[in-house]
Image (cartoon, rainbow, N blue to C red; front, side, top):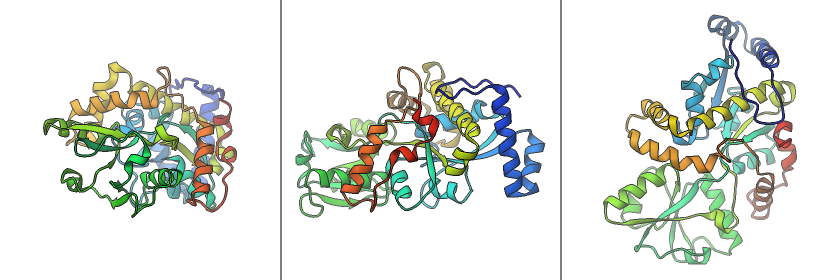
Length: 350
């Protein structure tokens, strides 16, 4: 096998250590899962791994898709199944049940799960800036220049989603009472209430749905505006790479190898020269998404992920601590979470 894993953090991996990590992991998989998985490995020569995403296989998972399509995983000796997340497919649950070795989750999801006893570790923070914002129509909704300007407006929330935790924290920090100062609307996949002006602010990821809705508003002769909670101190870290406490503790070289491969793929996926190819790869998964729009979404994703041109995976430890404190103060978790204990050792070295 030809290994070419670029070292991004302080944990240096050689071809020998990568091969050793894969052999140890393959042996563990064989012990735990019986002869069927061992046969799968021997036939392909690659170690089977499952990565459970936070949500759909779209632009926000571009690095994972590109790692699969461009051969990053296979060159590192792995056959990685990239599975979509969403309702009924939770990355943390799958990792704890052994259905996945790695997953993608946001800080609030991790903190909530750990507070309830989940034994998971964070390997990298993929998004350096949280893409979650709320879109509104300028002229229909007054410009929101401060959280106090939300009073009297109807705000869309996905109950049980990342946006619920973020907006709940924002309301409590600024003394906005749901149902009295701010009216909450439970959103689903139907944007009709937003187009009918029944809901003033609709939760979007700025780099995906935000791009699409902004274009549609422009076509209708309207102008989009965005409310960004991060500007007001609610900086919950977004999509991060996680694994089990067991893998991190017993097979650290394997965990670090996977982390480095994924970060390298993210860096490569967002290079301007690769934008069209990555958009085309995503289009094969979602044919309804036009390649030109996907290219625009990928360019909007670049500043959210890359740090000086590289997907470093740098964990904003202070933002994680603030998120944990905010969630405790606002009653979103019942007990304090030690963030340093949640971060993998290699993640803490940078």
